[in-house]
Length: 59
Image: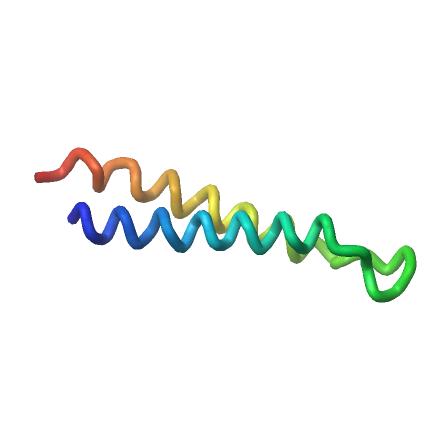
């Protein structure tokens, strides 16, 4: 189960980095925004981290 937890954490970190890049990158259309896409990806990353926490305690 440790392998699954590590894989989930790696995917979560990638999601958080992707959302950070979406926030820092200027929009192609001024004032167009991203429609909440970066927030959605950040929430997926956080949820993956929270889901992997119980897996770390399994043998």
